[in-house]
Length: 298
Image 1: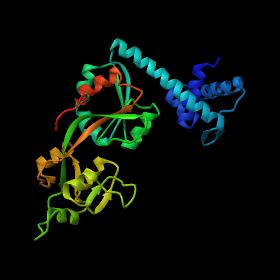
Image 2 (image 1 turned 180 degrees about the vertical axis):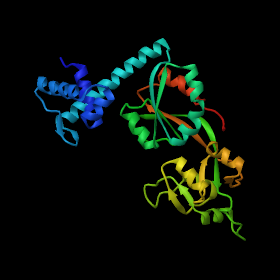
Image 3 (image 1 turned 135 degrees about the vertical axis):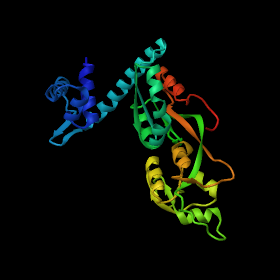
Image 4 (image 1 turned 30 degrees about the vertical axis):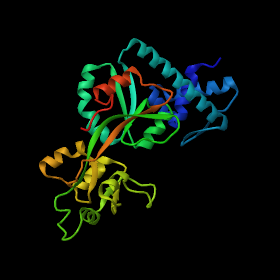
């Protein structure tokens, strides 16, 4: 019978790409880790890893075993979650993902209250793009993700929570009055700080297109909303951001808001595996963050 601890060590080495990184993560010596994985290979009469000075790579068989091990340990984690949910105890590590601006402006301000209420809970937050977060959810590395975008990926489901106001913002003086120019033309001349597009033909922002009626000229791209904000403050162009990100800058005059007939909104979605309902930890976390159910615009 396979020793699960040995399989776990192989899995962690393969995931980390080296014995050094895996040993650091597992907090054991590199030599002990190497001997354990070698023992697994010797007992089963197989070769799972190709070792080199730069790290390790999986053999063809190793790739198959790695995927199977991933399923085994994901199932074990699900069993632990089932036990915890039955006891309704908020404790242990909760691994989630979110866009950087959601982490910085929605989650961080409530982190202190969360810790005081649930001192045994350890939120582990991966900040990344919606595709990166979705990939980690599918791999079982995250329980759920928070984003403004739903990814059309089989096996994932998304539930709406809060709707948040958006704003077109720019540095004062960036939009000089243009005689006879429409608002859209003024924005076009200023240039748009966009998310990174897959190609030049992709709309920089479908939501923004709906607001101003045309695609703006893109002058900068970044997958980080925080970077977009900093570029905007520096006068690089205008940005389309969640209002909660720029409230302070609008109050002190660092940024100005472009007036619109109606205030646009975007919804924060919770994405998770279709086969994995939210744990008690996850539900408690979302409730404390006021992201546990559909709410009005804020």
